[in-house]
Length: 295
Image (cartoon, rainbow, N blue to C red):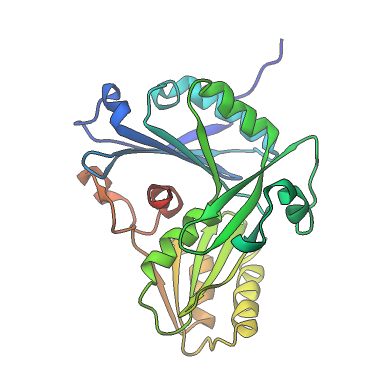
């Protein structure tokens, strides 16, 4: 019999005492899954408020198959993944296998062909999906590793699971945030060894990509490179940052060294949060909260 070792730890758990699992039918379950984390959030739709958050940090996990294994173990530890009556289940996947295609050019039968131009797909292991990007007149085509996809189908055999790429949630939230912009702005979402860079201007989304970095020097190289390509001046621009970064981190320090104004972002404002969320940094869990804004 195969034995799966536990390679995760619960980093945060927040639970509003007014929430009960018996209320699941009037709540959405949001799941953000990345290279080094699995995060769960519950939004009470009647109150339009986040009431639960669970953050699981993955340790010595290196492959999608291992992520899927840890997801199975986490499901045995949390009632959120055992409950079957959520109104809707949305899952965002963080990986570099995605591309945005204008809606007018999108042909569903060819979505795999579109993605193959940008990603090294494995036809046996990758499930190719698409999501109509709200407010952008574009379609986000992306892949989910089959082990992760199948695990969610097993967890929720009687409920449809809505998959989208993490960039879709970030784009949706940041376009809404920047809807009155009169000039270009850069936004960053930081994960361990990955950074998503978005540039939004008066015409909407102008740039979106994910970069893999191994050091602060790699990290800042990509940021400055994109700014140069987008004709943005580091001496004049303000960059807003969300994600797994802190004021005293090496990444934040090097950003401040090269960029004139760096600020940490805030939670999406179109949804409420239980008072128990007040102790969390405002810029954390933006990818999870942003799922609430996706249709």
